[in-house]
Amino acid sequence: MPHFTLDGRTIPFEPGQTLMEAAMAAGVYIPHLCYHPDFEPHGSCKLCSVEVNGRICSACTFPAAENQEVISASEEVRHLRLRLTQMLFVEGNHLCPSCEASGSCELQATGYYLGMTDGHFSHFFPRREIDASHPEVLLDRDRCIFCALCVRASRDEGKNVFALSGRGIHTRLVVNSPSGKLGDTDLEATDRAAHICPVGAILVRGTAFRAPIGERKYDHRTIAQVALEEERPLVGRQHGQAED
Image (cartoon, rainbow, N blue to C red; front, side, top):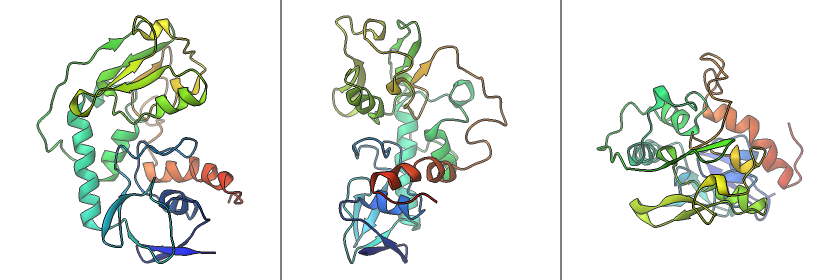
């Protein structure tokens, strides 16, 4: 089987796999937020940046190839990811202590994983609308990190409820309805698009704070442990590999 090296470790890969897929299949965690094995890679958050033969690339979209020397665990790469995470925090309004997703939020868990202790940059405090028009689902745009997982999930379900509009700092999450309101779309609380959000931007009503402190997703496990446990089997199934 062909292979490349990741932080000095030999990583086998199947033809067609990305660096992320091969690393995940081998049990190596690479931080990510916009990547999910069930959806087409988006490559937008850049948290999965690695150094490939001296060049920075996104592991979720970069194809694995023979003789690649990939570095993910260097201090330089960790610092890059830390700055990217800090920018995600200050670009939105992430008030973790009062957020229903606290303890189960992938952005928050990534911050802990990278050793983030402050925002480093000045907060933007953007003005973003909260859409409470849907009877079963709340859309809080303050917490959106534009990972587009809801966009891809809804597209795969054939509904195309969500989309990203605008560019740069003016990017915003929009919904596909004549009024622009979530309540006028055909989104249902059972749709995967209503559950795939890695932060607290899309919340199913009536489920907030059900998991008490001490029993939340990342209270006892790191995001690396959770990702390898939950996502690694999905990668394996895609390439016909046996699960551990």
